[in-house]
Length: 150
Image 1 (cartoon, one colour):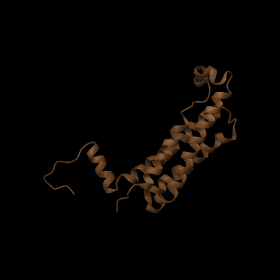
Image 2 (cartoon, one colour):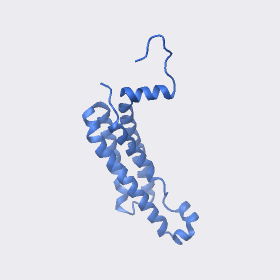
Image 3 (cartoon, one colour):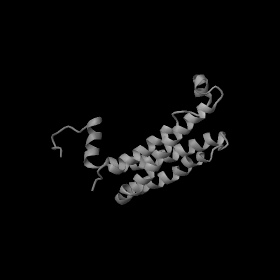
Image 4 (cartoon, helix red, strand yellow):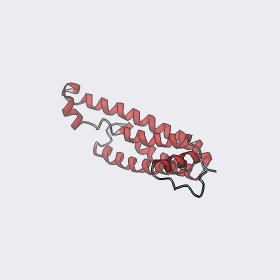
């Protein structure tokens, strides 16, 4: 605990103190909820453009509201932050890694495959886009292991 005569913390020191005291866990849960909704909406528009040609394209769209609900629940409830949030976040991470594989496979299936890599990276499915949703799931996993302020 800081003394009254000490200067207030700024920047990274303030963030580290918030993590140590357990104030950051609720914020990260809320950020997970917001990130899940934003990425699910973006994924919906991109996959709609591809006419949802593969049924797996619906999985990240469906997991968005699940992650958002778990993030909101984790913000308000310690119990949900330690149960529902890590389950939903782990599913989101797994789906993001699966999406990266499926996007790589989609690039390989374009005419010329990997021998025409530069063109197929630009014209095929975005290779690294599924990792965005993986980061959202990772935030939820991190929030679930952080200490919570009492």
